[in-house]
Image (cartoon, rainbow, N blue to C red):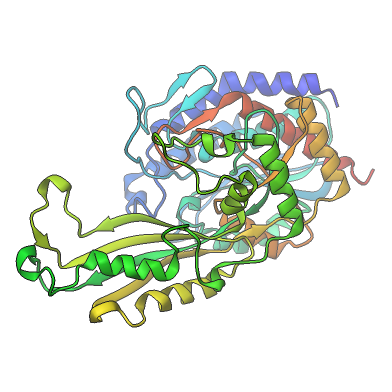
Length: 470
């Protein structure tokens, strides 16, 4: 395999076609259905689909068919089937939908305004996960340009990932006869601990969440009149959350939210801590004198990847501070997100969460918890020897360093679904979301050199996949 030729092709494609296409993609506010229920009427998702389809059809890939699949009442899916030198199948995955804008972008940046500063391309969705379709097809085109054989490849680009991928199972069922049974799954929607080597995701946390409502009055009352007689709804919220979380340490209390950490994952956490050092926490924009939750770097890695964590991600019933009068408010509503260990059952966790929050409400307040979502985590199967060798070779060829292995704190529902459906498959889950890339938040960017190198690594793995039985 002539890696110089592969790298040259990949680099040229990135600069000449991929970065320009990503620039236009950033301009399109194709928010996921959970954040834009009128997505079909607004037309942003269809605009992305048309651009992706047009770009894909222009690529120098033999034996490729490009199709937009639409099931009634669901977001669209890009389905690309590429014939190979064998009928063995590789499934490659990405998504096109985006998180909402989020406040806090620095001067000169905005979610739908692409800005390139050196190696960084700023804008919503560039790294999460707009680049995926371009990287997938370019990795295959690079092999064909070099006359390097590969197996049949199927590329799926969904439009519902940021909403929990609830449309995807229907598409997988619909396309199952055409997909077949892949022996390798490659997903480019994950993160990297640094931009200096290939990072392979070994696990993903699960997720449950919902809306907690506390009502104490039919209407707001003067706090001087009601205070001391009527319990404040925010105090009741604090009590309820303390049933779930130790407010002093952040530890989640119920055992239903925990899982045993495999020794292999503990060992990988130690190695990750050794590789990244204090960058594990320094990559976050802590305010002055703010400290991480532990001084033990390995414990921080495990906290992020194999332990549950609670976040309050939204609130209603709280007026802006400048308009807040001396009123004991009638209610407080918060939206909760609980990250779960990769092997924790989200259904059991969600039932437990609802029971804990609604049972025996303080002072007899009206308390309700409406579950909004749940997603199972994923723990990767052991690496086959051929894939372990291939990842090591690829990382050294394109990054100049060996690969690193780390769990991720986020959730990709597709991985759990495929892990259950194709238990015999090998998985390469990787991505470009490294330090400060800030997916879902302000100032999201794609590190372009990492995108190029990951694309080259995928080419190497696809080539080695074909040769593994030769």
